[in-house]
Image 1 (cartoon, rainbow, N blue to C red):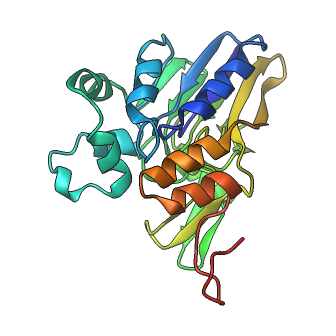
Image 2: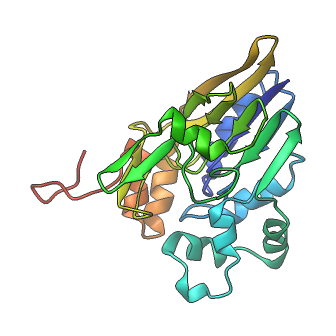
Length: 255
């Protein structure tokens, strides 16, 4: 089996279209979407329309859950922008998406970890920032899952790790947003240092699962300009550079 993994599209339609064009020339059996597909100041309705036409396995990430919250006034800016542009049919589609999904006995899809859409699988956040998770931490998050492949998203960082029992955990990175800052559970940055769209292809071989992490150029300037039109210079900077927009000691934006 050859399976393409996409995640964290965040309404970035040109990035998703570039990934699908690239996949058209590769032999894959299925495409799976690990969630956080629409939230952000880009093209949520147009991205939803494309995704709803697909027959892929697709998950709800934490932002799908947040988009369905009853109190619009308490949503953050990214969720609120998307929520205001989505109709009832799209909201019903979101509500039907599963949080996790087993494709077969050997493949488990999740957004964060099998137990939470907010916990990072392959990274650990401390008061000092984010670091790569230890093998023991990954094993603990894996719990009693026995699948040979676990696919996750959420952190936007492309990474693989072989757990202690041999399970390959794969994060394909983000199709649509290469950097962000977050304050859950402590302030930290997630940055790839590149504007590229990210996805992965995983393959089951006689020796076990293998993964290819792919960085793909696309018209990121169009996405950055869309973010600017919608009042989000932080997203525009991340889309152009792969770095989060933070003040520098001199008072300007970090390069």
